[in-house]
Length: 123
Image (cartoon, rainbow, N blue to C red; front, top):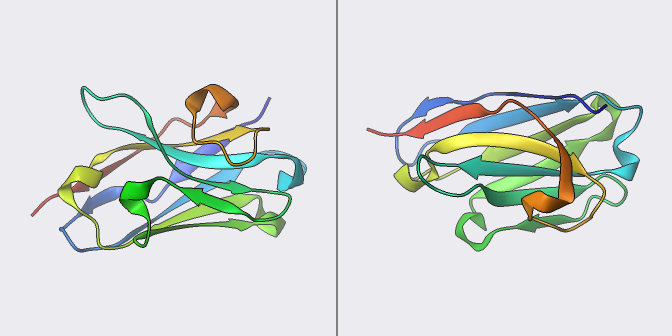
């Protein structure tokens, strides 16, 4: 079973930055796609960004392109989500997830999930 542990959430003002981290307990990330999802109160879970462990290719939902960057540290089995120029509408619980379907931002393609970390963007 894959265990994922997120960290780095918190309260930040609009325009600020946060860096989320996800440590994945597997032998190697080479065979996985790792994604960040978010869920705001009353809304469906939304795919934000994903990265392929095999070739490092990345995908983003349109609303975060140019502001968020996903990166992978294969040596540490860790995936980061750097979030810049944060907006109030980015407020949500952020989850990382592991799956085998590269390039997908659909929750149905991910089998293992972390517990989530709260991100609140407010003045």
